[in-house]
Image 1 (cartoon, rainbow, N blue to C red):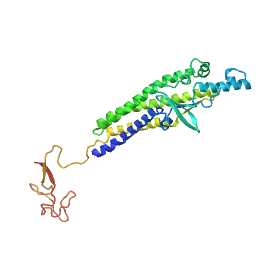
Image 2: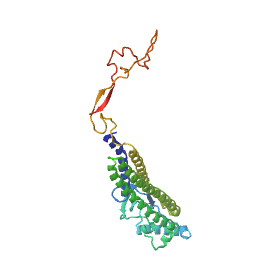
Image 3: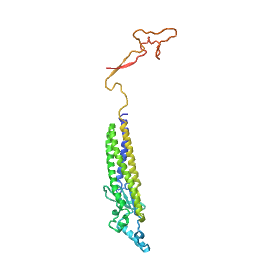
Image 4: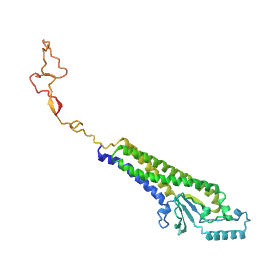
Length: 324
């Protein structure tokens, strides 16, 4: 296999690595631009607050037409006063919020990007130090604290995975010239894949758990949580691409040497040579040859016809190589 074969062998893992990096970039861009509807579809978690409602029974107040009307008006007024949007999308760096218009999502705000970001509904909805704060956050407080700690690790795993993937591409360029370069790239690819898998698992488990706690605690207020399909598909595609790239890098480190398999004329020492004729093993022998003679007797010929061997000096002419 020559250089062309080596290039073909390296092309596949390099393409898979670049595909994994593209997926990671898309994950990082989700929720960063309120005017880009495509990027706004990439989120880990969605909170739907369009139908938020507080019943008198939730406040330990007897239910009757008067109290129901007061609570409904108070809830609507509080939502408007606190500027609570119809939905919230939680992404890696920030969150975006918006309202429903003609049955479609319209993002009107995206928060500034922040390292180790986590979504705090109490703070976002402006419920700090209010009675509503106690009403909404009491059942979620412990879960939100665990979510905050896990979100930090998830962010760190993402950053390491991105950096390792970029380094993998750079080191992979040297893999084109030797299998040692492929081995080094395989090591970097392993690190990238491990942190990428850790990021994907953490994000999936974390937000699935948060969704369950969120719905359990706030469903009586008609607040619902859900997961973003597009984000998780992209995350796990990045994992698949990275894992596949690692396997091909490993393959290229033990195969695809890039050396030609053709055997050229002459030895490897660079010496030139020629060929000379050697004596036939069935030619003349020195000394007497004692063949038994008699009717029907044939001389031993060791599997080689001896017809007119003695008369044909050129019937068998092997050659041997001689260095010049």
